[in-house]
Image 1: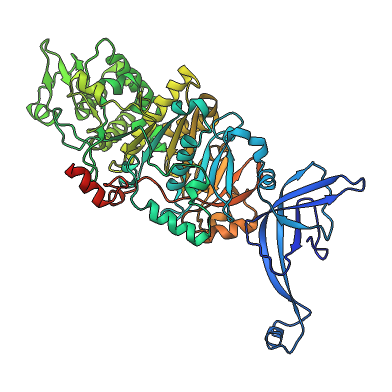
Image 2: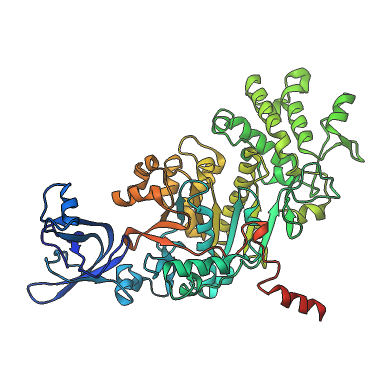
Length: 591
């Protein structure tokens, strides 16, 4: 019952735990009180502090005498509650002596505002007592809010695992209704090849979930309690960059663990020019600021150069390298009309160097140079030369038109629900180029067609792509998605180790905030003020598979755990027997 020795307010109170009962952190409780007119007001809340202590003694050392039976004392077992909801909204305090009980069934729905969500609730995990945490889909899909942001230490906070669980829950819980088939996901794989097996069943999920069920005393497995199938992702396509050095006739994906089912992706040189990809080559903010005018001018020139043809390569007539060494180094080819055919990214860089620095006896082509100083133009070429080796496998013209169409990345390909783009083998520059171009193309597509379907973008390491300081083209795209994407049906599920190093507007636009294990110094930063002090202290000891989830319908965060992935996260987890026993597989083969 509610204590009378501590202040009781409409937003916080202490209660005593009766002998034989128990309470733990994160339990949800309910207490009712009466107004003078007899009307009942109910307070729903979450336990954020539990303590026991002796009453009737003065000194710390008295505990020894109490334990030996020499001093009389009683044990006070009490807990503090942070109120999450008052119904009806009459903010009077509970009265000392009011009975407090666990919130279950209808009371739990009230405590978590699930009654407001209706059929727009989907499972976000399990609470400490095994009940399901509902998340409001209206604050995910852009109706009332959008985007999800996840913070935590790398390798311990399991950020990507929880992001994938949320995707699985959204796609398979039925919350999308008739539009479930129209939901898409674009996932960037930035670490190892862990996400290249999402379409394969995990052979360990049955044993791991049985262990969790026994340890937590649950009546059923966690998947069953949340009414989710323990299955791998469906309708998945895997894209990976081509292996460096691949000839046009043998373009293969740069992966090691998966032998089949992965498609290489690249862009043709003409696409690079027509679709204005040049700014995404200059990913560092200093280059974007100091060379902005040059980049914009050359981008426009390349766009005009690519007009009028549909070949993957470019043909120019104003470049006639007469240096035999240059011909060998750049492998320049001449077409039937005598023009020079540009088929590789290094050739394109050599052509730009000629137009900006070498033409007209070293003064450059005046139409291309404009009023830019030679030092700025040299810096532009120097930076292009620096990224040349990283982009050469990704931007090519030595292809047929059919190959260019076949290997063009398409996250919205018909019949595909989830697209995994593997970029972990690329350099940081190439990673940012791929992420920037794909997100820019997706955003422009959604601006044209609107909310025909919802696309969830899963991107880890936001602090690299959208750092708090400075500007870059990819940061501008992510800001557009964060601020306008939800109205177009683009939902960002972003993750980072430290939210304090990510652009504030991206983090603040996320309606649902999730925290895994945090460095305690990071937990004290202003970005985590949505966590009460007791939760910030606990963030440093959270275990893998446990997250703190904050959503607009519930004013205080809630601790949840989520099930072991039903999809393989590495090659040795793949269920080659597809859930069958070895004997059964042998019998099937013999038949």
